[in-house]
Length: 171
Image 1 (cartoon, one colour):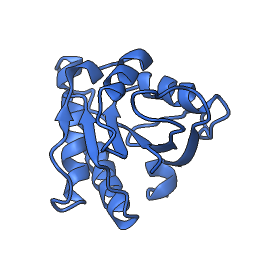
Image 2 (cartoon, helix red, strand yellow):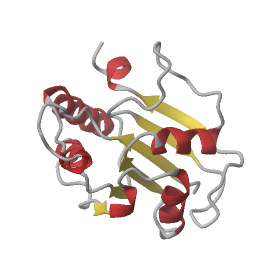
Image 3 (cartoon, one colour):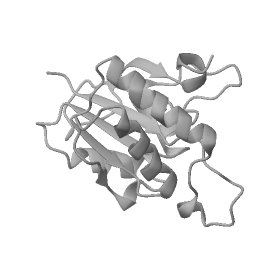
């Protein structure tokens, strides 16, 4: 079975509070988008084998609200501090550590790392928003990988789907 990597950018965060970047929570729209994304994933039978997430508050809350849509069908995410504002090499090294028994892994993280990883794996000819953005908040990108986790690279991967809240359920 081919491997699938799912990239989920955290939902919209709240900049109005006097907190560190790591501590920023989701705002009202972020909570709503994360819940809707979880429901949409469940409705479309998109259930990952493993979720690895940044422990930053906005990523933590995104996972919490996404998981509500799965009604207990997914194990608790693995919290990996290396994903906080991670670059492409860091995310790839985390993926290379994973068991080949996991066929669908979802990474919950931050930009610009997720944008750069998606471009590295699938090339630069990717669908952008009208404003020229790739991984907007609460966006899920599903990539079909050419190889195993231990050999993950930029060869022959395919973007299967990209689901952005504004285009998917917030029309």
